[in-house]
Length: 160
Image 1 (cartoon, rainbow, N blue to C red):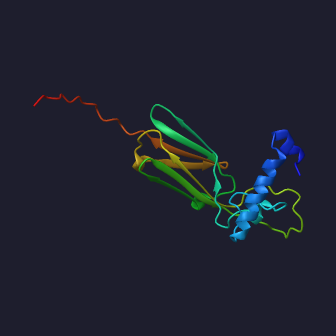
Image 2: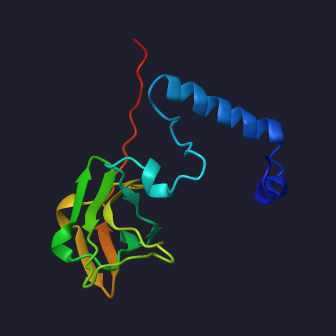
Image 3: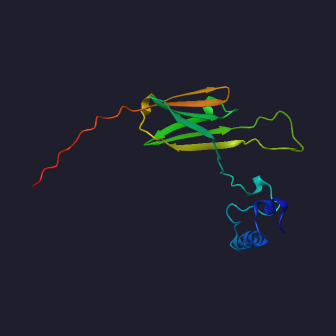
């Protein structure tokens, strides 16, 4: 059966049947097809328990630094880990849900709760020991000073 959204997206009935066949084949091996939820399954039912949400970031450069900005509302500064290894910046953290009352029904559940991370390949060399990070009104700003570029030298090749 092809849904209205599938028709709108131009997905043919055969393609829907192909996904169902892949799902059936994978069940024979004892696992669901990776990334293909069971029909009617809720998102949480098919996500891996160790799933980490991915942060949305803005990365821009100024003359003296690279700046990474991300919205991470609901996270305490002590629950954020920022590391730099070679040319990669990694931001990890944990967003915990604080419920004051028991919930019987969710009418909407769109907020992500749990671990998150994001790794970004830095576009330029930075001075890792001078990196600073601040959290204000749920917005994380990481400032990475650009490394001073070494003077370029020319090497003359001699014929031997």
